[in-house]
Length: 182
View 1: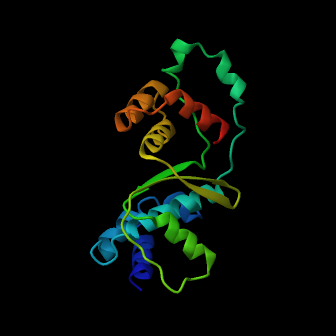
View 2: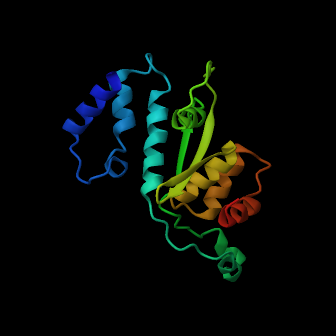
View 3: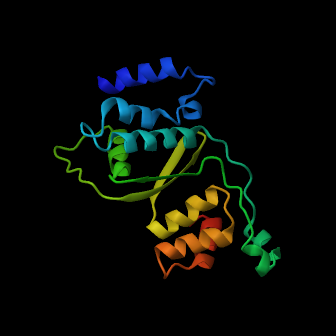
């Protein structure tokens, strides 16, 4: 198939430096989209990107989490300049197609008789470790907030970006929910 040929070409052009594609295949979704072409399979690049994120999350080993009580010791004025280091398995993926539904269907190994797959923007948070993962859909403001936190931006800047997306966004609640894992 075209995808198999593209994968072979990718490996020849970008030989692995590590034994796992989850560690070196970050450029593969873009490479694949250029080879196969979005006019043939418009969601393919997003699907492959999500699959790469899942692979990365599934092989990650999480670090010990910071207790919520640690935030109580931070002065309110200092909170806006805080930068968080997130778990290595945490990934974010935005797509113009509901590729999370497609990957769930693919992994279930139980194809339906009929499946309608229509374009629809999704904002996904992927988390996992030691062979397991989960995918959660987020609203655009929460996605903006969490993705920017994962890029080590300050809490203040991240809150402003999320509020630009949704004026009703509550950054304090969002940070608390994020830290406790809800």
